[in-house]
Image (cartoon, rainbow, N blue to C red; front, side, top):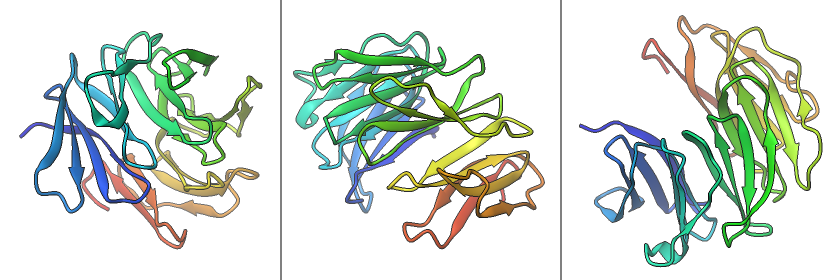
Length: 231
């Protein structure tokens, strides 16, 4: 079996995009039966994204290539150029039809629908480990190996940084409205808000690093998976 390295739901939850180590991306109807379409890539895929209306798909590879497929068609694909090295985060801001990428080159970039780069931000000296967009259409979060959570806004403004954590942020999730934050560091999971990253408390107990986190749509349930195989 080929490892799946990236997944993304459409806003309605009726479609899923996946990217794998076999250099292909797939779009599926939910529930999953067979892929609706398969897109070839030149490298292992690190991120995928679907627009809110489910009509446009994008993929990002370990070679820095980012492609957007309007209406899901390979013909007429738009390339988002500028990334050096693997792209680890990819998303779409419906408000203004803007694409955003986060790269191993420690850059957060925003692009227009035509592929033109609108803005670029250096995110620090540490590798980006997490990335999430806010539904407001002009802001994003990044987490990094230096344990810093940063909040970015467009047009260009200095990043707002939250207090450094003891260890690298290993997993990150933001609610749909971007106001509730969930992140893992030092084998613990913290639930917070944009105004206070540690407002709601910390969940401890994992014996190994927490690798993924999720928050239920109503905000009432936190899920975490760790390197020891526990959830």
